[in-house]
Length: 262
Image (cartoon, rainbow, N blue to C red; front, side, top):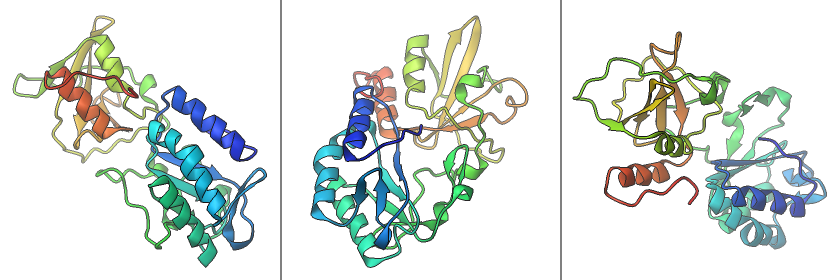
């Protein structure tokens, strides 16, 4: 989602509101124009290399970022990682929030965005000049994503099921909790992905069996819908693989289950 901010106070208010609502997001993108040294400007607030800016991130924003599950911050303005002082800002902010902060190596424009968001990952570097590593093991690219959300997919039982498969029957409430860990806004179709699911979650809804396969150490789920999605299924990222892992352990009897965000 995109929300305009007029400065630091507005950013604090928005992030804390999302934390209270238990919003989940892996990346915080701060989008704006940049000034000298590549310092990003949000409304009246310049995100520079000063101690006060780092303190604002550490004291006012870090707690909300932890609750939301943000793993990385991206300063998406022109050349925010192209000068020594620009790198200094990335370094100070990263130390304050204890997570990677990335900037851009060149000018950026509307051509670096599509309906899914920022697509020019190749221009991003951190304070040491390193490019971001992918958080998943599939190599999803924003540019290849489909706008088909999981809510538009009428989930079916998919390919044939046998008792040799790792089946996990649940009720609708538990299925809804599991789906709460999933980023259902974008999907991918990768016919060559042959990862074995563990487990296959099954539940009955509207007199039909729904199926969701959990893949790659709880980082990806695959749902099957009606044609043309019944062949290969659609893949969706998991926002919080560790949280999903703990929840699955709970419903399989090893821990007490917790819903996402608790």
